[in-house]
Image 1 (cartoon, rainbow, N blue to C red):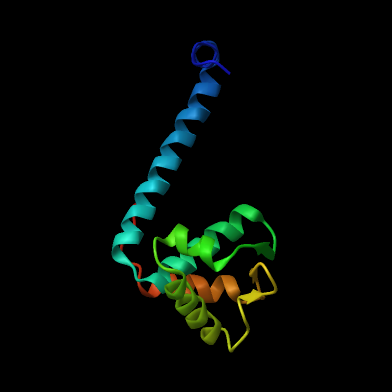
Image 2 (image 1 turned 45 degrees about the vertical axis):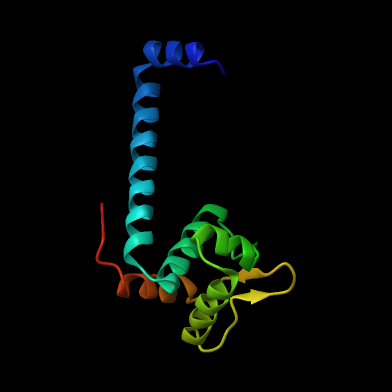
Length: 128
């Protein structure tokens, strides 16, 4: 869609323009929250947050993701990612977050709670 067409639809349909503005505002707030969390939290907490956000977006209990990709998303090295996921595994009574190749994150019944707890313990930054 060309920008002129998009602007035309936005002008003719105020409800569409309103939805687009809310979406843009929400995305900007998410980016700001992510930047604040990246500055304020250690790798373990950022890993927990990223995995929870990805889980919410995927909407499934398992999804393929390599530790290398996760390291890139967190802005750390692969060994740091391995350390963070090992820490989360230990917190879950030894149930692994990864299995197979490529590594696959597996959500257990309590994973959302324990990951949220991990993130919340270090979370004193909130933009919402």
